[in-house]
Length: 295
Image (cartoon, rainbow, N blue to C red; front, side, top):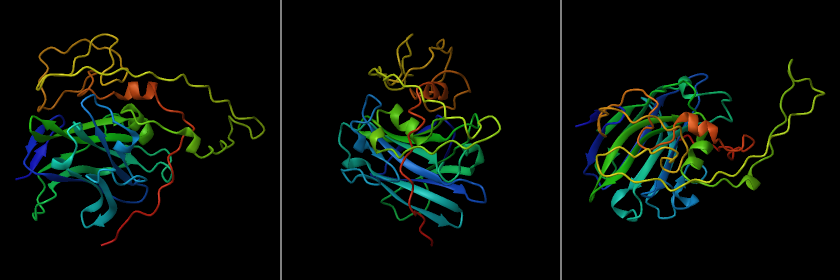
């Protein structure tokens, strides 16, 4: 039976390996969606940069988390992450499944331009084509360029899947750095010169980019099972700075849809925090290569 999930809901998993499929409806002017995975520890951060699996690094060194090529299917376009849960190291607490946009090909695009985005979770070892769970991912602000669609996480000796739906306006680079992935700017291509316009004459030199101060990220607190992450004043959640809101009254625990509020969702940095600590705007990810497999 397929669990149709709301944001914040979770379901237990009996599968030893899962296949997380992002599916959307393509069309003119609609950007491609790239699936990626962050293999993180109990502190909510990657253990090394190799824990970041994306389109230019499609296989984790362990071989237990990998990205499959994009495909066109009758229902739309898909991009897929596969994870062998029982073989993952015990230091792995969760596998975060994220989506980002091809901003090189679709400049200025956001997830407001993507139609029918859905994450479907399958038992990778079963012959059945029926998903275990599905979650419709919808933008909240219309400015998201990266979204955490869901996560597979440990609970006791087993695993569960949670529908997250947390968006970021800083793209894949901003999302990855929030989880502790370091960006080697020496490998980044030189940024293109800004185009001339009415407010920027061709003869005027481009404005200098201000130097950014290094950000020190603290180790986040942990939470007991079934309890929300503690958010003390001036204490970053999962190591990411955010404004300290008042504690919610009567806030339901995990597994229930959460009302829209300024309260951080499940310890993930909120869009305002991500934007406040965005990486160097001159950094660009390597260009994508051909990824579609037809058939």
